[in-house]
Amino acid sequence: MSVGYVAIQWNRHKRVYDACIAGGVVLYLSVFMLAGKAFYRGAHAISDPILAMRALATCAFLMLHVVLCLGPLARLDRRFLPWLYNRRHLGVATFLVGFAHAFLAIGFYHGFGVIPPLVSLLSSNTNYTSLASFPFEILGALALGILFLMAATSHDFWLRNLGARAWKRLHMLVYVAYGLLVMHVALGILQAQRSWWPAALVGIGVATVVGLHLVAGMRERRHDEAGTRRVTPDGENWVAVACVDDLAEARGCTVTVGGGERIALFRHDGGISATTNVCAHQGGPLGEGKIIDGCVTCPWHGWQYRPRDGQSPPPFTERIETYRVRVLDGRIEVDPRPLPPGTPVEPARIADRAG
Image (cartoon, rainbow, N blue to C red; front, side):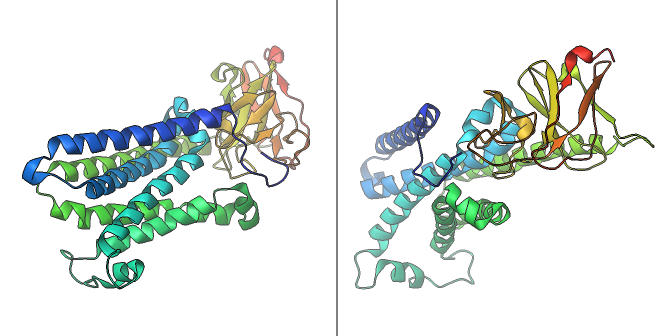
């Protein structure tokens, strides 16, 4: 969080995160180049520029798989949350590696003629009606353009000025970029390969991305379906949603009532508080976060709110909805009617669980 728009401040966590990304990229490229030199010799030797192009391309493609898998993995296992926290850094790094591949490829194949390289790329093959000779390079260029838009708008300046919904829609285009890249690979490299294993690796990658999203989606659907069975009894405003023992100290969980918006519950300082599950920043799932320095901390980007009133600590001014909550006989009950953002609500004391 920042009061104004300032240059990105790298704390220790971000430095370690970015160092891991940079180290992983360098290690992958080095191993790929060395392995390529070792396995392809003599008449089958691959030139250094082509080997570098392939190394950069496969590295970027692999990184995009990681970007797409982090979301469902974090929902299935909280241990992936630290990697989700700065996923935008990984996305920008993915674009940079992909751009390096495109720059080298366009220069190598289109940079030595009288026609400008980009014009040559767009005009050298216009056989769009043939699957076997389709200009697959265009698909890669379109995907790279989408990744550029996402990388260029990754700063909170764009999130604030575009609006959360528009910004989110823009960044959901990552799935379009992924589809374009899969077709780019399938119509390009795989058609020229006689070995079966490159196609198998691409298939495994696609199956992993799709499978993780389906598993996480089904889990979320079961969670919400359980909430539809919780209804407010006639003449009452309180609904039992969980047990005290279901919540770990300084941790959150999410519940739903009657299919409505998710509610985030937090156990802290001997009490239970309830807020909306939607972060004011980018709609992140607050209930999947935890209490840090006395504040509900969003697992996506670290925005914070006081659990007692849903207000961000000074000097920040963001506010979220809160809910009334009580503890009876070890059961947590909430009033599913949200209170205005920033409304103070006294936490339900766990010591009063006996009723």
